[in-house]
Image (cartoon, rainbow, N blue to C red; front, side, top):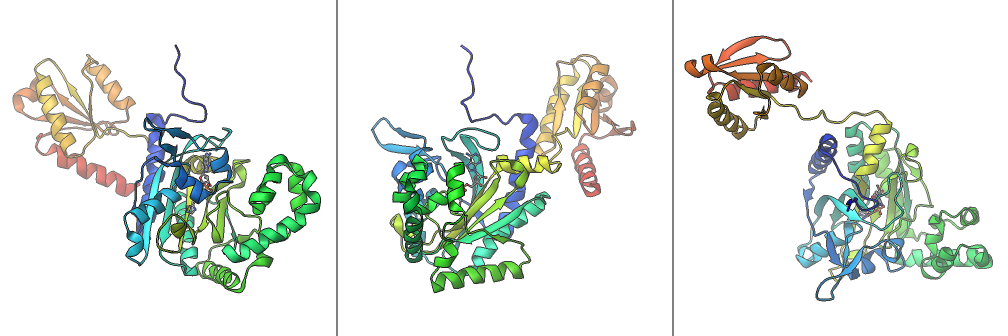
Length: 426
Ligand code: HAM
């Protein structure tokens, strides 16, 4: 039996893991610089949580959830997204009763049974933030600026921000009615999915990828003409804050988002050379969600992005990420008697956080030096008969070839200093 990885998933091999750690580190640092702290929630939740939040008629719930029953017949789903679990945790831990602003960030795998293709997987990794507790339009702009700051820190340039307002519960129902009026004479021309959308969630008609539906939507009414006065004002203020922050954006009334919980601001970051899966990140306000799942009515906004698309975009722009891990020192023990000293030295160095390598498989000195060079080690530490009798270590700088004799107790500090010097010179 040959075991195969499930379709739409992938392994991150050690040769690639430094890249993943790098982008995650920059995201964590950016989130921390805006005052966000990490939240971790389970990868499975009650399936009903996603039905209530993402919407029963959304593709995510209708077609894409990995749903299962446990041994006691309880209905669970692998999380298709991170917002509903954060909100569930917020309410369950009574944070809604504390008032004030709460800032969360998360990183983790999400699951959607979608047709796999470049940039679209069945298990994918999202990074995201949620700011719960304010409806001030400044925070809409600030949340967007966090994502822009993150992408800038990574060096991405070919990205654009598109924003829209999907209105509040009242004005969005006026808009749904206007869309139904517009589409009614064309019902027979719509694809079967859109015929269902027409009944259940008319704005989803704007998101259809079927060519004939795309043509029809060109003359559909615009969401922005149906915003009520407070929603119009909120959207104008978001734009004004974005202008003050010198963040470029385009207004795109066709942004509807695939999940049902959005109110007011909705936005996406687009990267054109990613092909069909060109949305790098997306988010928006969801002022009704906390009350909808049983908490105190509390406004909120957030976004999430996919690491896979991010890494693809970086690759397309020729942005290199982290260097592979290289040993600071490769220890060579010559002869049986050296082995004990080598093992003690290895643990002393590793206790100080120094990456030290040793490989007793390689017998000759020549083979050991070759291995040290091949791994890109900065130094070789040699312990042979002479070193054993003097209690010292021979240290060879593998870049310059210079050799010196050092006291083992001085070695950790010497290696740490040399590493610091190297990173200051980068
Ligand atoms: P979303 O637009 O469904 O929003 O997903 C956000 C990002 O996750 C997408 O822009 C994309 O980069 C990535 N993504 C989604 N599906 C896949 C997939 N099948 N394969 C690879 N990447 C994928 C949300 O999930 C909301 N929870 C965002 C949010 C947070 N809104 C408010 N707060």
